[in-house]
Amino acid sequence: MNSKNPLFKFTILFIALLTIFSCTSEGVESEEPVTKGFAVVNTLPVGIDHNSGTMANAGGKIVSSDSPITNRGVCWSTGPNPTINDSKTEDGTGIGEFLSDMTGLEPNTRYYFRAYATNSAGTSYGGEIDFFTSKIYRGDVYLPSQENVDNFGAEDYLIVVGNLNIGKEGGSDITNLRALSNLNQVGGDLNIGGYVSGYGVLENPLLESLEGLGYLASVDTYYLNDYIPKDLSIGYCPKLENLDELNLFIFEGDITIEYNDGLQNIDGLARITKAEAIHIRNNASLTNLDGLSNIENITYIQLSRNPVLSDIGGIQISNVVLGGLMISENDILADLSVFSDITAISYDLDITDSPAIVDLTPFSKLTHIGRMLHITNTGVTNLDAFASLEVVGGSYETYSEPELKINDNDKLVNVCGLLNLFETDFPGEYQIYRNALRSNVTKEEILDGDCAEE
Image (cartoon, rainbow, N blue to C red; front, top):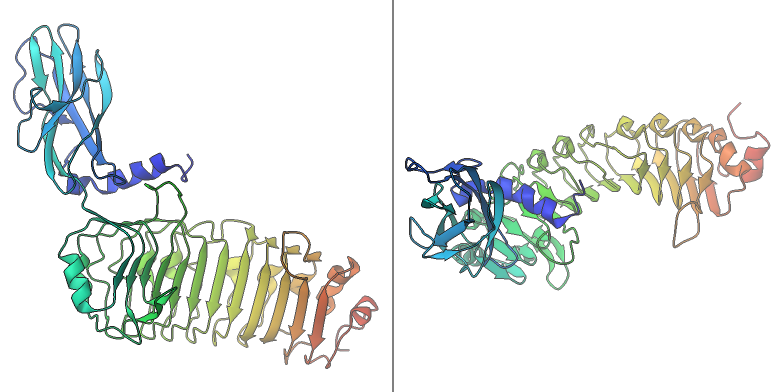
């Protein structure tokens, strides 16, 4: 099934939101004994069209009837026990399941509905279900202060059709997000701190938890026309220790976690199964990435300046082609085995200023890099892991010249692993400077076998 299909995403969200629609089963049977001769009817649950807030999808199931069904559908009203004298649909004839569209609803309103069926004995009804239509805010939301958070939360919006930006350049006074507890969907980017065009770098120096966002299930545009994945940014929140209050699971965009000095784990992201790019940078206390363990098909990964990050085993690489990988200034990160199945990188492989990295063996299956290969200031002693590398640049669409830089590795004494690459006539610029082997190694020297310490 194609997860880009908006109907698929609607179904997933519909299942997740059954509780707010007060539905307790997949089919609600008639609450009263059915009179002999009348049809037996079940009411099927409701799903809201969150694009408009004025339409709902429901249905029913005709279980049995002693005579032909001449009409069937659902009826609804703003009071209990709706009948066919209230608003109703007419959805054909016969026994079996049917679907109905309830239209003309008012936003932020409680409705009651039930399925009905008419035969020669009369009209019978299924059990009653009640639900609320959505209260929707259309447009971007900017919450730079605790007062703004509380005032917006008091409006009880279920959906924001736009970006939600929380924080203020220079620092907000926001201490908690509990007022946002009714929010279920953001149809744009969710920025809890971080750089936002037009607002600068949003900071929340007093925010200690994400309590209040536990009901937020979706950061996406599945109910809009563009279906463009939206992004999640959590940054510049130095007192934030974890993301445990998050329950996001409908998400497909980029995740940026940055400049959260107190953040120890990102386990709150564990329900997310799809993301395009992951940026984890400048988190002084972050030790592991276990919260990414359920995300598949990541296309780009950046891990930068996380001084105590040692365990990245939570990253799941389900594709053999990765879009790009940047690892820099992670003081104790050494184990890169999660990348051992990668055969190609569409753009860049950049490992810099990471002295704890001494083993590049996980890249031994790598044959193609689309643009740049940088190995700078690491603890590696050889480049044997690149013995199968055939191409740097030219295999994928790129916007700059291919580039190879192997510089400032003070333990690197063997660069012969680049032989295969140079034998295929590497077309771009290269530098092999200031390594332990010597200050400069040329392509010709490698081709002649003069590429290792004797």
